[in-house]
Image (cartoon, rainbow, N blue to C red; front, side):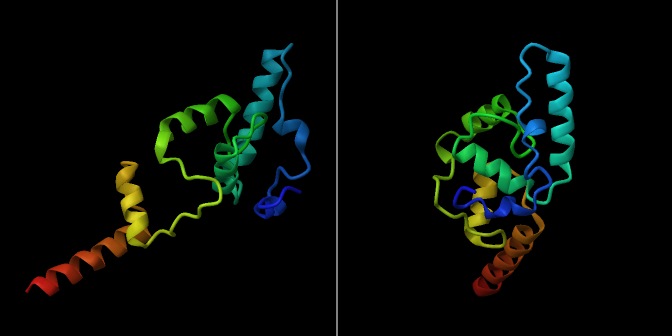
Length: 130
């Protein structure tokens, strides 16, 4: 296993390469069916986000990773542009000011942890001003 991929040990795709590398170029119908089956497994996977992040940041040139095809990962990578997290740099966890800023920068709704942290910070700021 590649270093840094410990998250994949419990993934349902682990050891099932045929389904997640559906390069049946001669038969588009079969290839699309394999892609749909792989994505269905990904949808319920507990490491979906880690897997997708791994494939986007490396970039992984083949297969279904994080519920995305190579082309879909390329689109995500282009949207990320310069805001892409460099390999090896860990993101601050949700519930921190850095994570709140990250949600705003990406124009994402705040997750519950960041929403709660933002409300606490706002209340603290309001109390300090009083």
